[in-house]
Image 1 (cartoon, rainbow, N blue to C red):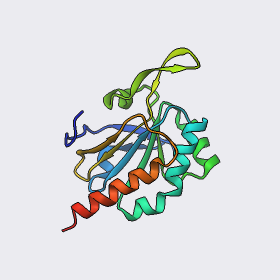
Image 2: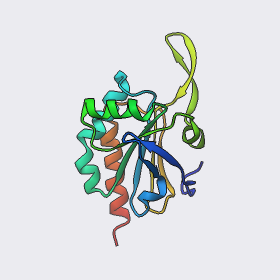
Image 3: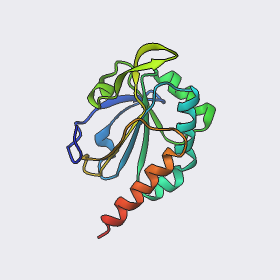
Image 4: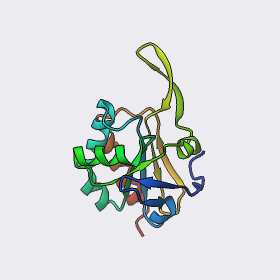
Amino acid sequence: MELHDKIADFTLQTDEDKTVSLSDYSGKPVILFFYPRADTPGCTIEACGFRDQFEKLQKAGAVVLGISRDTPKAQAKFKAKYNLPYTLLADVDERVCNQFGVMKEKNMYGKKVWGIARTTFVIGPDQTLLHVFPNVTPEGHAEQVLELLKEWNKAHKK
């Protein structure tokens, strides 16, 4: 997947057990952040960062979607516990994780495990890839994404 490539549509279950597709958000930039597991320390820091910047991200015109391999029920619990104002998507079968190439071998406490590499994709209103943040550090990440969006908006003002 390269910058400016058209992103193939996908459909997943939400934390409310509804079905949504990427194309449902056509016309708006989409921040798609992949995280390893709901309610773990790093994922909580990252998710709460997007929560704390949510109004500013909305003002910048963006839709925020978090995605992991958790079930819709686990996503709903995570969302409620931390009062997350955006949609969480459940990719239980790793189909979308594989589409975006975020499944990697990781080292957890000296053990090799297969899991999601924390990665954020910024997708344009026309469903093209605008930016990728690989190997995300949770602290301050939402602010990085907001700055990128502000710059993109400035460059694309009519």
